[in-house]
Length: 183
Image (cartoon, rainbow, N blue to C red):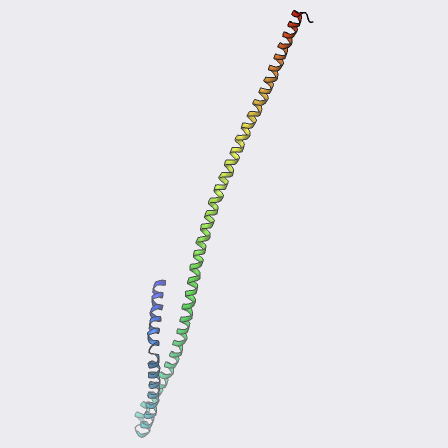
């Protein structure tokens, strides 16, 4: 839809540029036509007064009215044309500005969407990292608990071995004391 309107506006702009180079000729011709129509009107009225024929006079009056109506319509249409050309120019400028703003907004939207996507990806990675750290912490806690149990078991076993060794040494010392008569 924008393609045909763009081509149409470009054609109008090209026509306006082409006609603006000949504006002085067009204005001079319009003034000449206006003067000619005034001269013809006054000439017709002079000729009409010389005619005695009622029918010719009615025809001249009708032609004068047609010419006046046509000149008024031409003037009105010329004013409308200038107004529409000015409106077209301002709307074209506004359209260009809005198109540029829309393009900039689309670029900004794409950049923000890219940033949002990157942020989401970063958050997913951080969440995965936090879960990995939590899993590692749980595994290390389990390993620490197992080591604490093993330490307690070995401590108890060591205490038992020390106790048994002390009893044995006590028995041996007592036996050596009895055999040596030291008791």
